[in-house]
Image (cartoon, rainbow, N blue to C red; front, side, top):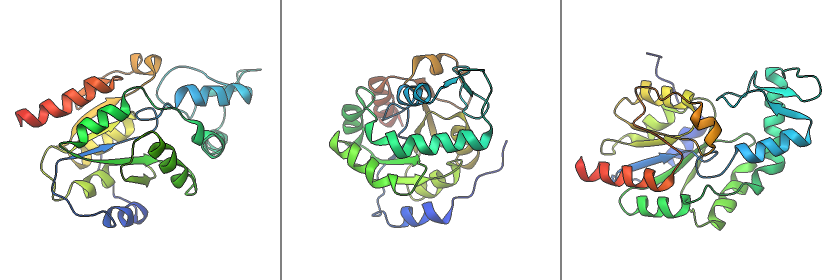
Length: 223
């Protein structure tokens, strides 16, 4: 099993600023979970003469030039992703049912949105976008694997803490750092979800918010 990840000072400062609570906790990602990412990113790639090579869950080595098929370097991939968020993140649309499901979940749980978002100036843009959709939960920005941040958020909370994210890397990180967490891998895009093999530590693999809310509420009732 991988070594547990250590949270950055940046995310710890945000966690320490939260009001204390002992309610059950749901920690939820944003991109490709609450907000669509893949269709917006595909439009950006197409506009810049780029494309996904495969509908598999990674960016580095999976974005190429349409003209000649040359795969972008890691550095160039990162630059394009940063440019995408800087120019397009305010246009992202909500995954259907996310607002209603999170409202239902918030009746019994605290909801915290934990997102890896390039560019510190993009956080208020994201908060404003989500609030306009009726999704007004604390937004914490992280970088890298999320296990350390999730473990810090979970301190003092009843088990199981629920973690919702699309990224297999983040789920592996949380499983290593907080094995008691209930892990929901939510991938809105059908193509990417259908190409995802469910790992043994994943409790639910889905792209449906109603199923997600029902799973979380029923898990609390049977705990």
